[in-house]
Image 1: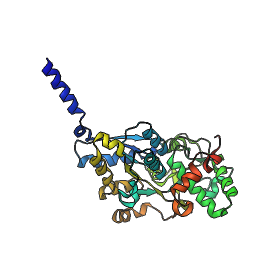
Image 2: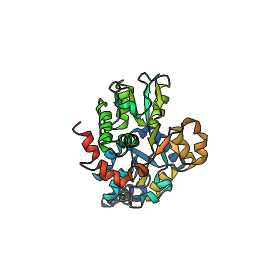
Image 3: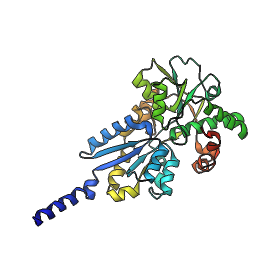
Image 4: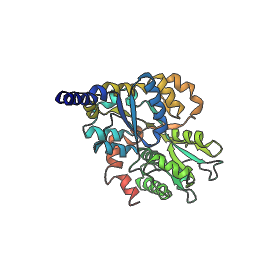
Length: 326
């Protein structure tokens, strides 16, 4: 009986050994990437039989907080650099994470774009139209959503071009846009539901990839995509969560998973789902899907993500002052 018990314990220990744990990953990703990573995971698993990829989705900033509070994600595929930097400060991700993969660890990119109802009845063409009294705007809460933070920064970049260094006018412009938002959802997918299914608002601001997905699912006869005169480069950073992979014994599998995003097959899946990619051959193949747009960067307009975090997103920063008690 004792020998049988010892054998059972040994088998139980084998079941939770790093070798077994290495067959499974958890990817914590942003809110509107569910369909994308369902396809990415299918492709990766086909090349790695026996592997399981679990997904966790939510607002990017909310996901970062969840990891800091105990969510054991092996990899993160976020939509904002500052959310990975929060994990760096928490000791979960290496300080040189951006150098561990090509293109500053951003395998694909997008931009804030507009989705309007078919025929564009309110004639929304640019950021200026979002401050009109007759236009209701939908995007998620910038306090919890990386998607919405890009919207905030893109609108601010436009306002800076329009008003120069007049911060009072810039803040008034952004405040008016916020005033025109009937409801602030916590994440991008909830905002999509508000606009598409609940029929609230005249224009949804979200990543270009999401506008493509909505048109694909609900039909191009119901919605139109409008690309503004200027938008902000939205890179999608990825990283291995070393503190977790060391515990799980999943370091190599985690790296292989993120490497797959850079492979021709991975890049094609990304492009098929409305994302812009860096692989030249794949980008050329899908060129017709992506209109030309003047993109500005966080570095050019705001002086980099560190400065953005301190001036805009830190407690008591410009975003707090504009967002107020909404």
